[in-house]
Length: 295
Figure (cartoon, rainbow, N blue to C red):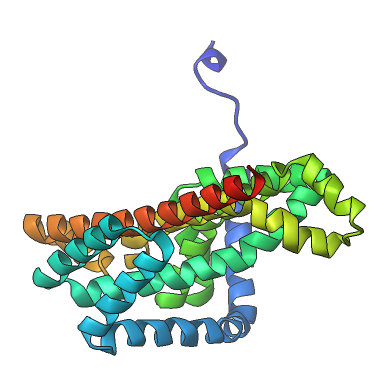
């Protein structure tokens, strides 16, 4: 009757040998191609370092004006600008300005990479139902996989540092960008597409001048979700050397520094609120513009 209480499973020796074989194969791949892969990502490291130095070395009043100007251009709302100023002022006043700027640079670079990768994939999914059926399960796995798991292969390949953390963040934050781009293009009114065909638009013209502009509110929602997910990875990525607000949080956990952890945690929340409000306001402006044009 033991079989009723013990779930049937692969023999422990076979399972251990299989795991060991896979681990050794991955280590061999890392030893053989790790340096090459690291070289391929070197331009990414230069870009990230440039953004980080720009945000931290530029005098804070200029960076503050730049961020407030960006908030105004995107939202056209004095309330959003005032909220952005209040949050950034409190962050700087509490001595977290440098760490916050490092985090903002990481979010900026991660979002750009996610958009550059996710937008073409989303467009491809909207045009091919077969590709969509193949990619959707992969996106499901990427969204449900625990964030810590992404660190394992990245660290084995590239070691500890900013670039491995950046790659893990991008992988974790990529699915919403792909899904929302696909959804936005699929929701474009068929009558509009038929009108474009009637005027003799090519496939490329229809995509660039009709589908993408009309799908932009959904794409902006995807960018918003991507930013939120990059912020969710800030503390996790700090475990492998990514600088910013995540490292003080880890230090607070290790040493039981309550105020250090809470202050930096609230700073992360504040940055999330700024990005969320600004991107949502911009998406709402695009939506209103579309309603006016087609109203």
